Length: 206
Image (cartoon, rainbow, N blue to C red; front, side, top):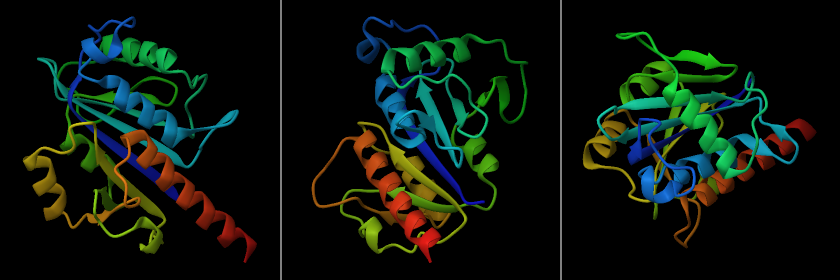
């Protein structure tokens, strides 16, 4: 079965549960941007994409780095509104995790946390083919995208820091773009998902 993975790097997104649900953008390091990307990648009308996994890399605050992973194949009772997703993130970040644990620890069905950032994600991805969403990169509509296991990296409203950008380049991640106009991160995710959906539909018709 094909597998889609989206990795959203939040340069200042808080890695602790100490943020306000009333004023999420100002209190969470723009975790709201990452949550909207989660919704765009994982959810469709009345359902979850069972072939999709989303990683939210949280690099903000003294608890960082930490990463949330949501697997559409096993997640349950997710709601699409931003507040509900923020409540979920808050609960997961507050959940006790064994000190020094390696890799992702599932804290509720389909939702796991790792005490680490990009390294934890890369270890979890295995042999997935890597892509980076970049403005001005070759259009995703012209990319191959034929691997069974694909991972798409994108930054939040701040983009990537130099270290992350260099690390992905060293791993051979292919830059792809979503069009000539700069769009919000969650819109970029939606455009990639739509392209993959269209290709999958065409493939099934053959």
